[in-house]
Image (cartoon, rainbow, N blue to C red; front, top):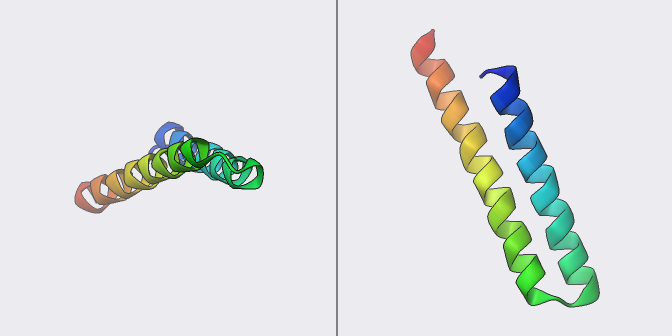
Length: 57
């Protein structure tokens, strides 16, 4: 996994987790759902990069 893509995936995961946590704390279901979606996007990006690494080497 390239370091740039790995960093982007981790950043998306962290941002999503933070947004989800804040959304829950303030009772904003929309923000919570948005945070979960961003976290899932980061998870998917990380999984995609891991698959690429498997087939590279």
